[in-house]
Image (cartoon, rainbow, N blue to C red; front, side):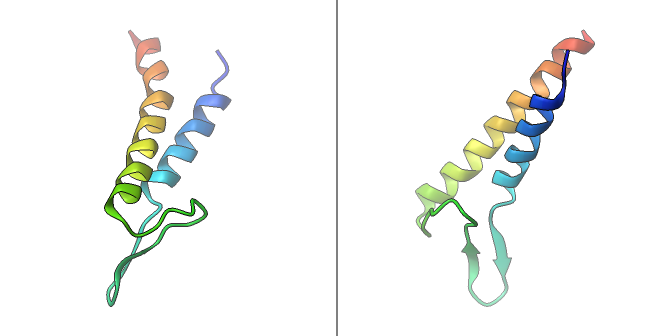
Length: 66
């Protein structure tokens, strides 16, 4: 089983989860290259998509151990 596609999914998913950076003065302000605005729906969507990609990347590894 080639693990390169799963490693790519994991990297993209972690990037999605870490897309927000905190500035002490303004709070959450940077959304990277997604074009998402500051609304909570967009922020939540980016984090959920990142989480889904991480799960998709890790799930085959967990199934392989069983």
